[in-house]
Length: 114
Image (cartoon, helix red, strand yellow):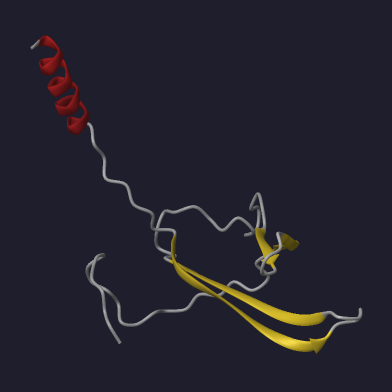
C-alpha cells in the first residue's frame, strides 16, 4: 500500500509541475533542385539547390544558425540510392528577406486548407 501511495504521489507531483512546450522559430520550408546540365568532370551533373525556410519574425525563437553572428551554417548532405553520403556541404544565408504571409491566422492551431 505504501508503494502504491508513493507512485500516485510521484505522478501527481510531476503533473503539478508540467509546462507546455512548443517551438515557434521555424514554421515551414522547402528544398528544391534543378539540373543545370553536365558538370566539369566526366559522369557528373551540376545542380542548383534552393532551400527556403519560413519563420515567425515576431517570435522569440532562436536565430538561424547561419545568420550574422550565427554559430554554424546549415549542413546539407547528398545521398545516392544504395550508397552512403556522397557529398556534404554548408549553406550560409546570403539572402534573408521578410515577406508577409496571408491570410493572417488568428489562432495558433487553426489550419486553413487551400
